[in-house]
Image (cartoon, rainbow, N blue to C red; front, side):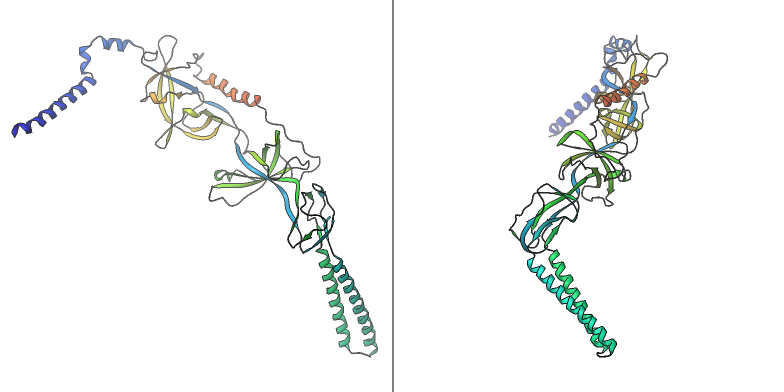
Length: 423
């Protein structure tokens, strides 16, 4: 019984002894067993290669940053409606063609109004009789043949006759379907002889001299978007040109579902190049260009709610090669554009940072080897300043090589949307 209890105790003691020996060996206790290894390690240069980690790097550069916000939206006409019949009737005349421009107040459709015209004539005849009776009564009361009451009754009869005449004319006018505004008529849904019920669709009418583009922006931009700003609009149907839109209004209410802000722009479309319902891509510039520190997005390491970048510090190395050591710094980021991210705090222009190989760097002060080793700086110039200037010119050259689309032509004279700034 005592022997069975002794076996687990001995096994546990052996495991503890083995763990202690392994710990002693890792802490350098085995250095004496191989004395030749230490001088070799001491003689190896820290920055030259050997056991140093190879990383890729980039230089923090300052460049003009245009804060362009992209969105998608749809086009709609400034005014648009479906013209409908107010009353029932049979179509006797159609005074427009499909796709024709019409003017406000132009007669589009005439319904059968013969009965209403007869009622107008009857009302006018009754009005004439009432006026004649009132005139006669006015003369008789002056001579004292009738009382004032007779004159008052005839005057009231004149007003009743006038109201009947106005009612007859209004009833007849409802049989004349007029254009409510200047626009372009669509495809009609009726023919001469059709009997239209009250509210029947006749034709779609669109005022396309000005087109509205409705799009949404993130709520964080609500203080930076204002009426009068210019947006650049592109449509799939016309890929070789861009249209200038003036921001007309910003919805005062934020959409609670998508936390977005509704914006409406106006486009001069007097040449009728655009159509309602088109899909549009909208680019809005918020303010003027500003200088910003930019680095590649892959240099940012996010961990535990922090954003860090590994900065490289240059030191003296063997021969012509520099020795680079690492330093992890916290940064604040801003605008992201084209694979680049803006640095608001934590780095300075011309500093070199790690863009690839961060996972192989365990602690600050590690010696690394640059896979894209830069040339040595001349005459005390800080490392990376010259290369930063070259890198800063690269985006400008890229932007110059990809020229924006030309603006679409517009009609001469004042536009329906007001002045377009910074075209």
